[in-house]
Length: 195
Image (cartoon, rainbow, N blue to C red; front, side, top):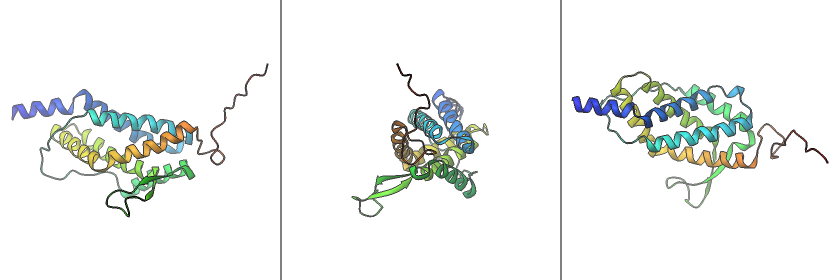
């Protein structure tokens, strides 16, 4: 038991885990204050945070659950809807993107319309539930929360992160300002000096 306890401690407090927890926490805090964000800043910050979360998740490493009881969740349907709606309002017409259908959807050759806001709300739910459990400071609970969030990383939120990051990347490199006029990229407000 001593060895298992030592392994748990080393895993849940590893540098990789701390980086993942920090990234997840920053992402949740960011989405909790969206009403203060402008569309273009939201796109840039989302690209940065999602990149950090994915990179940290890949480096976390594997573990096995210790407890048998199911883990509690804290994000309600109302919480999820609020985050999804805020993102949808910020991105407007730029919220939708096309992706290939997965094996369990339609004809696999078809494209499916997906929204960045739904993807990010799903990721928010996973991150917030994980951070809530991890912050309790009980190593068995921290371990099991990490195991569960990494299982779900492989099952669904990892691919949602990559797809939404790809869609946000296209908006970012195009200079799209969702609060601006139509599809026009944001204009530089500093006119060039004329000679």
